[in-house]
Length: 150
Image 1 (spheres, helix red, strand yellow):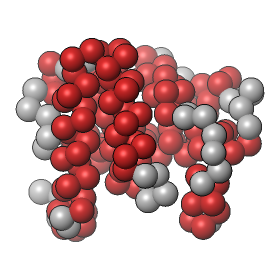
Image 2 (tube, helix red, strand yellow):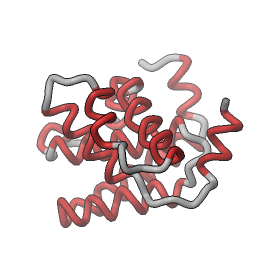
Image 3 (spheres, helix red, strand yellow):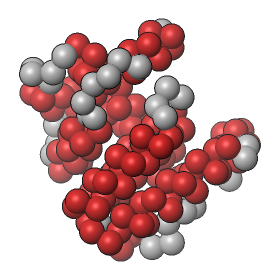
């Protein structure tokens, strides 16, 4: 299964991260299941895009509490940030920590571009937080944290 996911991610396609972010925002603002929201959004997508969108949204929700715990280490004033920005950072952190087939530079670039478009000057914060997540993951802290998340 992992090999199939890796192969699918190598096929060039439109960046579906903005759509995934939008769906996660809709899910957080509603009381609907993500599957219902997803099914409305994927009708015009290719099969590969549908799978990628589903993997990003469902994966982010599956690991949501874990992602919150990771990000809080790098966000001094998380409660004062726009909730939609936190959602974007959760989506990007999911990709960085759980999708080894997503290039780090692509994840960071997409998240920073979306932040710049929607939140202006907070783009620098997104860039910093996501690079800290990458360093934290790469220096072994991620695997140590998974064993003992205290």
